[in-house]
Amino acid sequence: MAEIIDLRSDTVTKPGPGMRKAMHDAEVGDDVFGDDPTINRLQERVAALLGKEAAIWTPTGTMANQIALGSFAGQGDEVICDRGAHVVNYEGGAISALWGAQSVVLDGPRGIFGPQDVTQVLRRGENDHFPRQKVVAMENTHNRGGGSVWPLQRMRAVEEVARGAGLGVHLDGARLWNAHVASGVKLTEYGAVADTVSVCLSKGLGAPAGSLVASTKERVTKMRRLRKRLGGGLRQAGVLAAAGMYALDHHIERLAEDHRNARKLAELLRELPGFSCDPREVETNLLFVDVEVKGGSRALVAAAKAQGVLFNAEGSGERIRLVTHLDVPAASIPEAVSRIRRAVASL
Ligand SMILES: Cc1ncc(COP(=O)(O)O)c(C=O)c1O
Image (cartoon, rainbow, N blue to C red):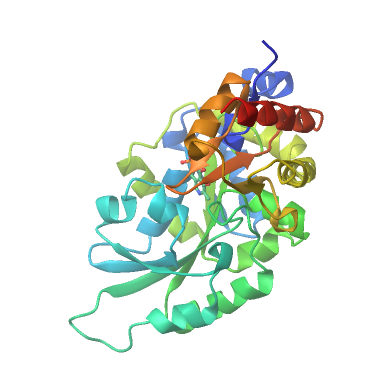
């Protein structure tokens, strides 16, 4: 059978020879003692990229987001974010399970809310009835929003309202690299709108594992303690940090190719009967398509798998999600669409 085209997520990328060599050659030490030189270099580099004092490495984006949120919010506190946020929908209920905090969710097109949405949910004055609000979280690019990119001005406006209310600001930047490449906004500009910024190396950048949170030195010290508590203090993690270093050297600018491929995929898919999407809405590497096919989206996913192309059904509705990445070259895009066409015919 022809090679499988895997469009389920940008997390499926596998380290190539250059990355593996970097991992093989990595200088390592015990990172719980702060002795891993490669981890230390990566932390310093990411802090500098985002214009922050310090950064902390974590094995996953979930841990990065959660130690950041946990550094603001505890029992009885409140986190403000959008309804589709990863921190609320895809982290196993961690905000309440780990920190005892609750979330209040805002609506915004494609995951992007505005300052007035925050203002509307602010709790005024001291009152025994109220949870204490601690932090506003934005997600850029927005996963469930279809890889949407927050306009910088909008982020600044949200930040202003949050700060005015004495709240912290977290940025879930798992795919901030994609936002940066798509918009041309500097990473330091994004970094400046939040107290804590998480970034992932294991999505479009292609490392096998690794995320970081950048912040002040003081907050990073606090997050180190939370990371340890969650069992995220790794020892010779430099082998993974080396993959991250390689990813930063080689895989940021090329994200533009993934974005072009996603747009192309949208243009070709919308030609198929029962498929609808707007290629103009494809800002980065994530693509949602509404499908009206026999048996529904789940039958389509199964039929496509039989043709050697993988993607996911999204939510309960008739939607599919496709993600372009490092291991999907441009030539695979028309091939994927041909296979999906055959899959539809087989339903
Ligand atoms: C926006 C966003 N934040 C955080 C994460 C969590 O990353 P991880 O899977 O490494 O825990 C993801 C994963 O897809 C994501 O899309």
